[in-house]
Image (cartoon, rainbow, N blue to C red):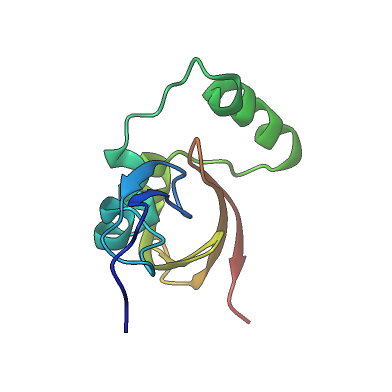
Length: 118
């Protein structure tokens, strides 16, 4: 059984934002728990001037290592999302119905590395 939390300020394990937790087993902010990590990333207002979340720098780094880097909008136009699981998103490619996975960065959010299911 969960117990009331003595220090209610928690750090979300998914998005990294601080939130007020009601119980000791709350490890995700309400947005991540309700919407899942992809939608929660869009709901949060990330600061792009922070060097740790500079979108252009992260994109350039990913582009140097992968050929198929996509934003959330680009990914959802090509894939139907089935579910998320800690760094992977399970998808179906819209063009041909092939199921597989994509890797993703959390903040800022980019998707890459489509791997069809065997």
